[in-house]
Every structure is written in structure tokens, then in C-alpha cells.
Length: 139
Image (cartoon, rainbow, N blue to C red; front, side):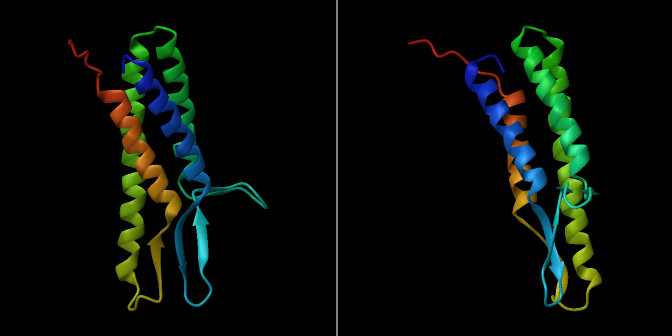
């Protein structure tokens, strides 16, 4: 990630990861749908895996800031954190899909919701921004 476009894409991906952590991650329930967010702050703190994502996002933002300031080792940290974020989200998605067959019918089975998909897409963009190097095209 040498250029400005990669840093901008990484910053936007980190922003959407934070937004995705607070959106609903799964919906379940029989007749009344119950949405479970990654992190809920009010009326009481509820963690459904989103706090680990937020902690990794804070460290990744620090690594991105350090990379912009010129530290070469910060890029390795950003790459490792991007892979960790993606791995945590894939495990959470697999957990939601694993719980579906426990129900005999489709009624009440948990279904992944928009927040989990936003976070997964943002993690993929962050990995792309961290690993893909810009190449100069000579005319």
C-alpha cells in the first residue's frame, strides 16, 4: 500500500467495519423477529463478537496512521490485523449458519443480517488495500 488510494480505501474500510459492528448481525425468532447486533451499547452492553472486531479496528487504525507516518513495520501489522478481522467474521458467519440446522423448521432459525455482510465486505476491502501494491505504468 504505497499510494494514497490504498490508504484511503483502508480508512474507508475501517469506518465501515465500525458501522457494521453496530448493525444487526443475525435475526432469529419465531413470530417476532429478534435482531442481534455485533455490539449493543444501550440499554446495557451486549457483545456478540463485535468488541473483538472493534479492538482489531482500533489497532488497525493505529497501524495505518503509523504507516502513513513512515513506519515500515506498521504495514505488516495492518496486514495481520486485516486477516484476523476476516477470520473472526468468517467464524461468526459459520456459527450463524451452523445453528440453522438445529431447528427442525425454518421458523426461528437464525439468519445472517446486513451488519455481518457489511463487516465482511469491509474486511475484504481492507485486505485488498493492505496486500495489493500499486504499480506504476510507464507511458
